[in-house]
Image (tube, rainbow, N blue to C red):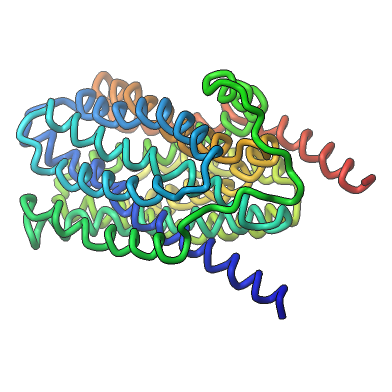
Amino acid sequence: MQEQAREDATLKRVLLLALGHFINDIHASFLPAFVPTLVARLGISITQASFLSSVSGIINMTGQPMLGHLADRTTKTIPLLVGPILSAIGASLIPSSPTYGLAFIFVALWAIGSSTFHPQAQGSIGFIVPPGRLSFSLSIFSTGGILAAAISPLYAVGLYQTVGPKLMPMVTLIPVCAYAFFVLKFLPRIPKRLCGETDTPRAGIFAGIWSVVKITSPALIVATARDTVVQGVRFLLPLVVAAGGGSIADVGTTLFIISIARVGAPMAGGYIADRMNKGTLSCYSVIISTICLVPAALITGAPSLILYILGVSALEANIAATAAMAQEMAPYARSVASSLSMGFSWGMAELLVVPLGMVADFTNLTTALLVMAAVPLLALPSALKLKKAQSARQFLDTRT
């Protein structure tokens, strides 16, 4: 009875964190959804629009590891409260940006909120669940974010068309404040004990982060390749739709279809990852995605959309595996490891959207999509390293 009660309490905490991921990331597609609007209204180029994404990338790359370092040293859940509030305010102000400069500020505010929430939220999963269920629990958490990203374009466009840009900030704060209440009531602190693991070594913030970077670098490279493709699809496909005469509603619908179709990928991948070599899953992920994405760039219509869904789903089936491997490599710094395998990688991917935008400006969108499709193969050597490391770890666990 007591064991069942503990399992129920653990599941409730995981679900609460997944709900927070949903509440925070439902604002994730506001920028890509409104890129065509900003390009048309502000008179900016695709390259200039891609720089907006790079602002978010820089903030995530620098902010998430540092905030993760601090999160590993506290049990208070303040980041879980503050992060979604900043995300909601920043994202909801993007479509009403009167100037290019203010658009940068609003994107930055959204990115700061996201950087505040993610490290502690994902790192906390490792402190809550036993090692044998880490990948699947992380997949539940990831699914909350992916489901939110799927709904986000329709949510953004729906708010824009119903309440208008002026009232969007007030409306978006309603679910965020409700979530803050639930966190204060049911998860005021994060337990910092896990299966006898040692406390975080008390290195300085930069030395501590760098030590985790060195340990987790193969997982970080695989995650960056994955996120570059996801960001590229989210940034380039709306422009393809707009170039073909599609409306803002068509842009939102396209993003929604791709996002909702891949919601189950992390759950399936997390279930498999707890039962096989996680590095092997990473290898399959990068190879299958490229096989799907190359022809997707060369054709149009429904067949192209289906191939994009399959390619992105193959990559996102690996989300929980890379996050779990990063946490296993640095169990004393789970928030930092999580911030690298999801936050830093996401930020780096947002920076890499800029050269994709340049390729689109100087050549065409098809060429940019083909360049993007080749990115996963660059991570194959790192995926093979993860496979080898996991095999050695499983061998040692068996001997033990």
